[in-house]
Each structure stands twice: as structure tokens, then as C-alpha cells.
Length: 278
Image (cartoon, rainbow, N blue to C red; front, side):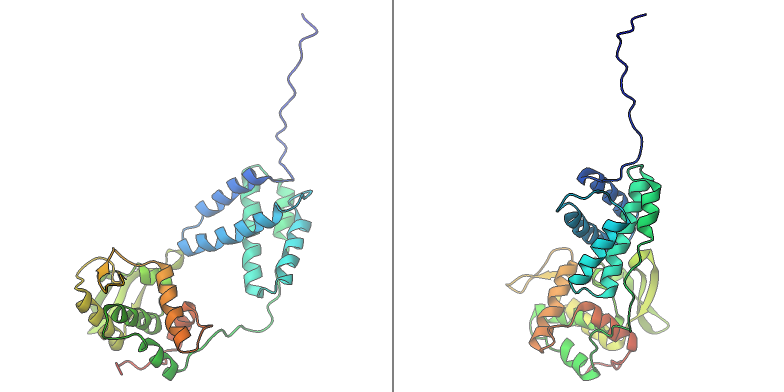
């Protein structure tokens, strides 16, 4: 037997303690694949990308509890709200869990990372609240004599009267509008996390939407479409970004620059707007 034959070194299967970019990218893909909601995917993707940029910006000894704690301090120094920081940390914990599940990170490090505490919330963040008069002036700001103005009025009316999210409004179709017991409603609406619900539609909202549908000559498909500069309807629908710009455009005109689409959802929950067109 030849004693000079060299044996191959045994390949180590020991999980890593320091993750490189390919490992983080693989774990990120696993996190996103485990989520069903498009809103959750967007939020987790942004949070993980921000953590990866910070993590790879300088050499680090290990992806462990100390590093994640330093990242939490980094977020606190940026002046972010407690809810925002806790959301970013939840994404990092999920990243560590997927890395450990794939054998790229030791279970001990994963457990230590999951023990990193979030930021304590002090009080309740109120956000931006509209009065009934402000809400009425807001959705009546778009020009009712133009096609774009009719569409924007309908978008603002649905956000204020029905409390839909941007994605839910962009996905709204004619089939969702049904009459139940002599009242109009948005039926079988698939929302965040795949939850299905029915939302009542006030009469003034339905009247505003009908004016847009009649002017745009729509009969099927998505309820809201793009409007070009020539004042013509085109495309198969609108995106969340379009809804965002519609809200910000008219909020700025009224001096409510801090108003966001989710603030209209908050207003709809309190049901201040009267159930009539004024």
C-alpha cells in the first residue's frame, strides 16, 4: 500500500459565524419567499437591504447578538420611531432564523440574535388626523370638470370613505362592487396577509366613483386607470405609487404636506364623514 497517498481534507459542515453577501442574499430570498403579503415583502426587503448595507460596510467578526445590538443603537441614533426600529429588528431576526435553518448560521447564534430586545414604546403615536371639514375640502379639491380630476376625486373618496390600503385600491375591480341588502359594498376584498373582508361603501363614495366610471367609459377590469396629459384614459390600472402621488399632490395644495395615505385609512375608521355627497 502506498503510504504517500494524500488524503483529502474533510469538508467542514460547521455552521458559519460570519455571513458574507451571498449567504445574506440567500437568506433574504428565503425570508421573502415565506411571506404572502406584497406589503410585507416590500417592508422586509427594504429592512433587510438596509441592514445588509450596514453589516457589509465594515469588517465584522460575527453575525451575533452584539452586532445586532449595535445595529439597534445605530437606528436609535438616526432618530427613528420605536415602531420603525422594532420592525427593522424583526426583519433581522427573521434573516438569522432562515440562515440557521439553511445551516449557514449556528443555532446558538440564531437564538442569541432572537433575544435582542426591541425599543420600548412610550405612549401612542397619534399620526395625522383630519376633521370632517378638512376631509370634505380634501376630496373635493380635484377639478371635477376634467377626467383626471374625476378619477382623483374617486380615489380620495374611496380612501376616506372605505379605508382601503394603497394596494387594495390599486387592485380594486368592478367585480368587487356589489349591492347587498340595498347597500353598496366592496365584497371579497383580499387585504394584507391574505385576509378577505367586505367593506361597506357610503352613498357619497359610490356616487363619486360612478361619475369617474361614466366619464372614463369603463365597464370591466380594474376600477381605476391612468390618465395621460391629453386627458385620455389608458392602461389596465394604477400602481401604489400613483395613489401616493394623488394624496400628496392635493394634501400639499391644502397645506397638509405631512398627510399620508394611511392617515386617510385612520380617518375612515372613525367614520366622521357623513353618508351623503355635499
